[in-house]
Length: 286
Image (tube, rainbow, N blue to C red; front, side):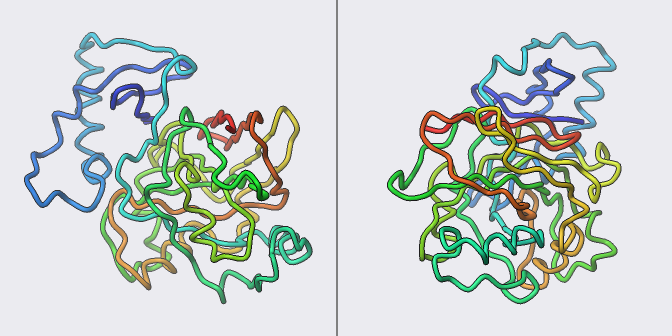
């Protein structure tokens, strides 16, 4: 299934350019009392919600329809406990980061196996319709398209051979970045600097996550174009790596890294970030 969150916290089933409002399926979620769970309850109960959606479709229960381009798209994950990000996980991006002083700012740019992963603030997560408001317009702000995996169940010390079983689904991500001398997690965590969407494709929708074309255009100009087969550490290896340090929970977001071609955006620019099978994020820069 391809599921989106839209307008006033509605849940939608995406079919082409149409959205079927299946918010009623959220009745499958259990009730919670304080203290509320620290994970995303929709992702934690996704199989039950998807089952309820199938029942609704089979019974031909009347549901409003919307056009995808006409709704306000929210992040498909409402409450990620953490956003785990992979730096320089494409070799050509590692090379360009080391070669361009405007990217590295005298910071040492090491291989991902050595420098490890980093966390972004979950308060930076938004949907495509929110756009990106430049946090430091006096500095260089770059786009970084990334494949995003959303964790579906709790796990720690997960073996790479089992890791994909822990994925609820995938979506397109934009890891927006302020260039400068500070640590990555600070420069990549302003409000709105983690754009997710346009929807969550459940894991069964993606036949081969290691062979997905991805690209981003800015005002119609292609800036980044690659394939996930070029990842240094694939999705399974990243999950194993991350879970060796901390427990992963439903709704945790794993950003898998960006290819070469990162470049500056300015207020007024329009970005279109696409990944095969996962749709296109249409994002305005303000």
